[in-house]
Length: 71
Image 1: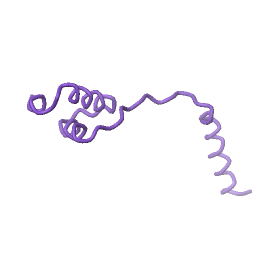
Image 2: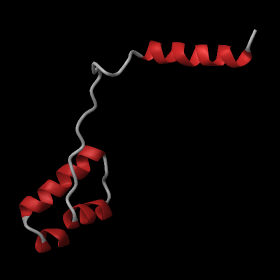
Image 3: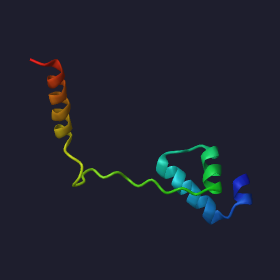
């Protein structure tokens, strides 16, 4: 309530929205965002053309361990 008396409601709503997008529920976070607004956390992509399938990375790690072990 104290913050509502000191900051416009649109700024407070924006700070709360940004904090919520990060899963940050502390008053300190809201105060910090009111001082310097940050970007809203966007959801991560499940797939992207430049990101390989997880099995490719597993194979890469497996092959690397095989090379270290030697014959």
